[in-house]
Amino acid sequence: MQTLLFNFVGGIGIFLLGIKFMGDGLQKTAGDRLRDILDKFTSNPFLGVLSGIIVTILIQSSSGTTVLTVAFVNAGFMTLRQAIGVIMGANVGTTVTAFIIGFNIGEYALPIIAIGSFMLFFSDKEKVNAVGQAVFGFGALFLGLDLMGTAMKPLSTLDSFHELTLNMSSNPILGVVIGTVLTLVVQSSSATIGILQGLYAEGAMSLNAAIPVLFGDNIGTTITAILAALGASVAAKRAAFTHVIFNLLGAAIFLILLNPFIGFVEYLQSSLSLNPQMTLAFAHGSFNIANTAIQFPFIGALAWLVVKMVPGEDVTVEYKPKHLDPIFIQQSSTVALAQAKSEVIRMGEYAVNGLEETSLYITTENPKHSELAQQIEGALNNLDRAITDYLVAIAGRTMSESDSTKHSALMDSVRDIERIGDHFENIIELTDYKISNKISLTEDAHEDLNTMFDLTILTVAQAVKALETMDRKEAMIVIQKEDQIDKMERAYRKKHIIRMNESRCTGSAGIVFVDMLSNLERIGDHAVNIAEEVLGDKKV
Image (cartoon, rainbow, N blue to C red):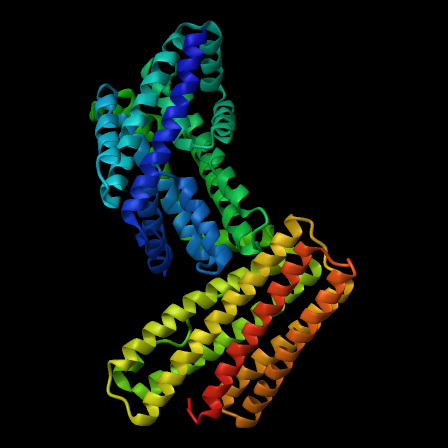
């Protein structure tokens, strides 16, 4: 009994390790293409479904794709409607693992593991290592299944297990519950379906009992997305909840149609001469494809329902540029530069918002302000790349001397605004360090920080306004305010030294305080750089 238990538990462990290694290896092989697929091919729900299928096949985890989708929604990369399509596609893509298992090549598991190991250990090339990791994972998957199969053989002779499967056959809801709970525990629908295929192959379970468990597996896998959405934005919570509703509705629909569906699977089994593992793979695939086809026309209704069920203000940051249409580059460099300037101003306004959220995080220590500021910093990085690429494309066209000056000024301003984001991100990290290490700043230090923050935010906002209106007077005020920021930093450093000498402030608190002042002073420098684009008569 102990040997069987160890084989089963060890088999699950090796199977899960195989799935992870295979997914990680495929993900490394694909590189940044996964993010590009989700970013570029979700413009409509149908493309969203396709991208969900492709990404899930590449990373061998519907939970991984869903978590990635929740993260994209949380970051503002993807809307709820786009996310629903990807989630539907993820459910279809995950069936590929069951088909892989259906080929039943367990006797070749050890040679496959050996090939993967040789590729990992005897090559210095990153690409070969990634492929080796995927091959090793592929072999480990079958070795795990083989061990589980060995452990499950005696189950078919146990009266208690036989009675349980009979109850599941007559009460499909029991099967759904068992599938849900098992997947919640194992945290992998692929693993529970692998177990199910093994049981069915050993004759320990009938098709009538196995198929409802399949439905439950789909429900159980939604827990990963729910965990990923905890503490995330309202939009991310809605995306995770969509996954739950989609799979619950699918299970409910097919429980109603259970007998016709079982008849269809039996027809496939006999007409295609399928082995038991492949029979359940086809059942799983048919269920998910049909569920997606049934619910796909109702994506809008599903989104509406989720918004009603998860109330709250949807605060997300749009990462993508709004004004950078490539057609303007072909038509007119002057018009394209005007579009680029609009995007730079939008980027500058984001920087001001990011500073405001960072200031609120220091004051309240409420993580929602930190999360929003981090989203904004991510948006600044994305806009920096997009605007720079757009400006580089414009540089390839013929420009007048005036346009060339505008072009140079915009390139410099984009760089300065992106650096402002880096500095307020540094301040967030310092605040996180302060909170996690229970470091306390004195009331005087907090007051000094708030004063300097207010002035810095005002200075950056004025610099962005000066760039937008090309107002030299506004630009001059920015330079005066930055001079005040410099003086403040020096004065507050001296006050800090006095507090240190009076033992009112600890050394670790002092380091945090001084680093925050330093980052604010550098933000002021970048605001001056933007203002100087105006004062240098660089008419943008």
